[in-house]
Amino acid sequence: MDTTPATGPGALDDVPAEAWSGVHRGPLRAGEWVRLVDAKGRKHNFELVAGKRFFSNRGHLEHDDLIGREEGFTIASSMGGEYLVFRPLLSEFVVSMPRGAAVVYPKDSAQIVALADIFPGARVVEAGVGSGALTCSLLRAVGPYGHVLSYERREEFADVARRNVHQFFGAPEGASHPNWTLTLGDLAEALPASGERCDRIILDMLAPWECLEAAADALVPGGIVCAYVATTTQLSRFVETVRVHGGFTEPHAWESLVRDWHVEGLAVRPGHKMIGHTAFLVTARRLAPGAKPPRRTRRPAPGAYGVDYTGPRPADVAHEAGNGAETGAGFGAEDAGNAVSGLD
Ligand SMILES: C[S@@+](CC[C@H](N)C(=O)[O-])C[C@H]1O[C@@H](n2cnc3c(N)ncnc32)[C@H](O)[C@@H]1O
Image (cartoon, rainbow, N blue to C red; front, top):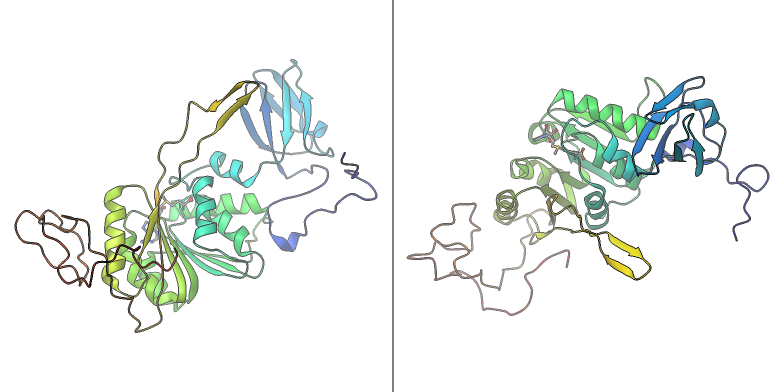
């Protein structure tokens, strides 16, 4: 049994403000956001303001009846509606916050943080900032000794992102997260102009291949470029552009599918609904200046670069004649092993 007192002696202090975690411990305070969930699972997010009322189809609640209490309680409205009260988690905040552009969903932010290896102290470049959802995960992952440099070419989206990030991290009026720089401009031009060097670059945009040259110049050797793309045509173009560039390891492409489960007595089965598709992810590591990846020894699949293929063509892949059934001219001895990937 947990005997830790929620308040008073032995209670955990609030998370230090310098951690910029976006999380508070202890009693709810005015100015914080709360998330109320009713018996039907409907969610209501609002900022606590002393003296204010929250209205729903089941009457109203006084904010003052929430302020000063430890989160995780149930409260009844004037017409008997019951609401569970918690502070919103980051994963809940990003799917309910105002949006300019489509956001990176939490399942994908988690993949990006883990597999693009975002570490405390890292210097991370991202574009575009969109609504700022991924930015929040990146800022948390780099911590107080890291830095996130976000680029966004549309001012209206930058404004939405700024508001969302500041709301989540609770930046005081007129202040900004100290480990975040948001630059208005196209990454392909603004990043080279800044002279920035970085450990990781995350590209969530329509045409990430247009930013690859700038990313390659800014990344330290061993750094990671990661693209998040919605369609197979974007995926193909980005991967082939990375290969053609030659300054990266063999790109690794994947997607993640997450399925909820219904667990109730003997009724244990996959949930009926799932998000079927969000986007694909690609990572590759930057080689040292002048270094070349090992010569690929595995032949492309038959027809992979056949006559119908019109995308970027790696230097060691010859144009195929005829119907595209002949393949792989220019490759070394065939090897049953995996393609060379710095991230396997
Ligand atoms: C899908 S949204 C990004 C969503 C964001 N990652 C999030 O989680 O909220 C794509 C954004 O990229 C921006 N964009 C596209 N190409 C860009 C470029 N070359 N440089 C900077 N921003 C770019 C768009 O204006 C748009 O806001």
